[in-house]
Length: 315
Image (tube, rainbow, N blue to C red; front, side):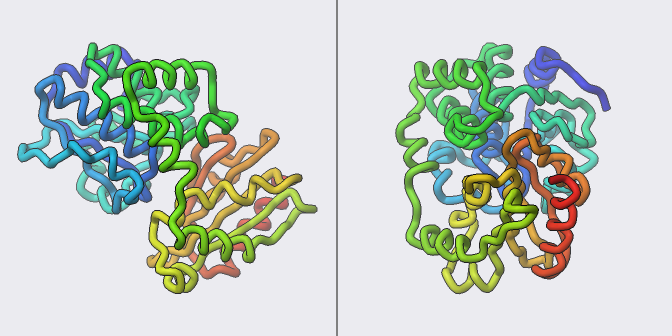
């Protein structure tokens, strides 16, 4: 395992063929945008490439795959994108855990096991890295690639509102817009459009909100029963994690989502320099300073208790 530069990563991709590109579980706009952008780019270079998605692609991202179809070939080079740890591969972990040739990521907490690791924690999204990488590879940025890159950057920065947004983020977005990405459509889909089921879920989630640590910590949750009652799926869960942090005075917003396997998927969003990654590390997770996650096994009351106790130490 070795840490490599972007230039070295570009060389590896140019020198190899027959790629499988892996995403993390509960796929979001960045892992999907990065994976499909790289896939389309490799295909423009005459290489074989398929994206292996862990889980179901949320329906709102269907525009990323309009011109995608699986190719039939034997894979001999595996790339993971926006995956910070092997466990985040979910159902893909068993098949690929000892086969990853290149890891491309932007999480400072990255602990992936791969032959080569290219991490730039200064980037707001993995899609930023992919864009710079494709330029180094002399790839022509098509509209499909541009849409993928913009999706990754915009969703991981909250449409350029989060503190991880940098001047480089805006520069790349501007270049992508000049190259013809459908930014208005992408913004509308990801930040303005809601299904009725999602609206009902948000209303129900607001009723679960509780405050701790003198109002500095807000917790919301969704249970399997709530999801079943509304017929809600992954699409309705998207974006809920941003709700508790929006409350005035809240420094840490915690969102708990019950899963079928007896765990709660926990998303943590923070303000004012509170380190979400350090918090989640106590539960085997990680991510970014202002946005991180983890999974905890247990019932609602137990998991909430563990989170509150750790929040009290930090806040």
